[in-house]
Image (cartoon, rainbow, N blue to C red; front, top):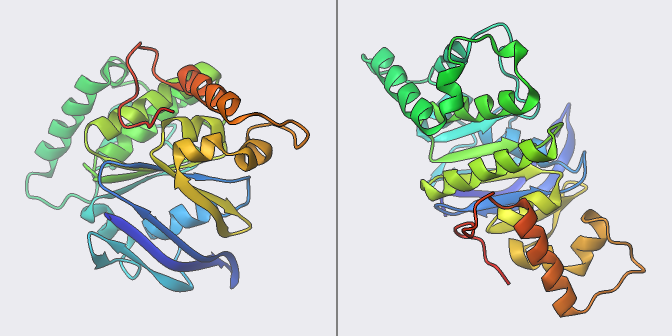
Length: 274
């Protein structure tokens, strides 16, 4: 596994939010954290990125323990964090925001590395090139989210963590963001997706963890979780009185993936369709 969290307990002001969390992420996987607001998903992402020091437990990346390292050191190792709420610098341009995403690079040719990486991202996402000198405070929420993800990619990570990327976005922009996430996997990146929108997250993920009250209560293949009556009842808006046969559940899950998936007719690579 690329990333392993072992027995992570973490919180704020001495009060734990997470209790002995174990999760792992493999090479080229999308792993999603599903849970209600306040369940502890963002706390776990902050602990992995180094913004929050765990009270106990260990975090390993590529077999090396990293929970004592600074956030900058973790970025240099290949971990990027796109925070909840996007947190772009509204008074700065697209180019300036992107440049800040590469601040940890310490090579003597930093400017060359930054400009080269920026050109790559502009080739991949033409929207960035079209607005490269525009101040981002005038952008829509969806445009700012795409920029925030691109800023995270400036450090050339191997693992990118996205905290609530669909928050506050229109359904169309949610689909665009999810399409981008699946493209990241196609390019070989691992993705940790922290998301309240269980339908959207499980539809594109390989595996998932359900976090409730700071603990992992369910885990497994995303397709299995999406088909689970328990998940449907708690997170997909299906009431306890409603019961579906196994075949009906599978048809509903497949239909849901089709609705959330890419706008093309091709299947999303890596998603296990029932």
